[in-house]
Length: 290
Image (cartoon, rainbow, N blue to C red; front, side, top):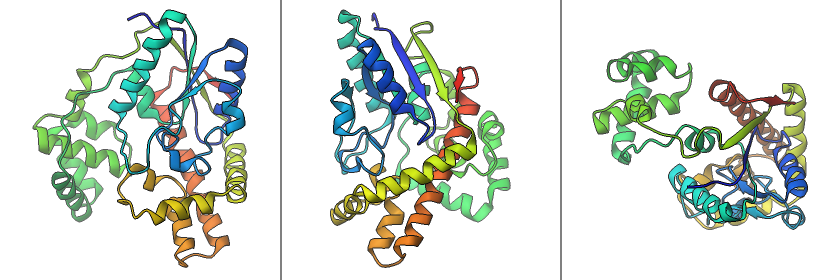
């Protein structure tokens, strides 16, 4: 399939990705495509710092706010939507800018998406319980018996990825790393260029704190109040967005406003740190800008 010119922009939250994408789109006429798993959800404009209506009017934005919080978009669903968009753009030769902080989305495009069987919730729950009772060291050693590459590659303390790898082995009888080795990139080599925005950490954390203040003044509490009122499954992706738990606790009377703001700032900084770590591990060869 012929593809339009494609630019990928990755970076942690509050690093200025959206502003850079908008600047580039206004100069080139490119379409901006969302590569942030939380900005997919219509219910979370403020809390996820989605582009404003004014910003969206300055350039063509796609895949922002297209899902309801009751839905759970997978990486596969997002990649299908993106590849359909790129196919639409190809005849026009119109450039595309994919911007966001979800590393798995970029990996799926540039490295491929493994066709891993869905793991039943019951299996995952058993594996979670095993991790809890065994501890990381023993759990990792057991994982090494079924998937030595995953056990060696997953960083210390990354419970989520350890549990994921073990769950896949348990359910499919095949190592997660073997599934992943069978993948092919959706974007052929040479069809895209990528850049990572990687600000100085102190400056990034200051921007994270400032963003929280803007969110609080811009309706984040009301947004979470409306979301919580729907009584949705707490396991849904939208319900796990940074800030939902903290502001829901404030609304329930479990945290004061000041404590909730402090907790939200800390959660946002932690999220940015995890994104930086991912990008340094998974996007080592991408050019950096500060």
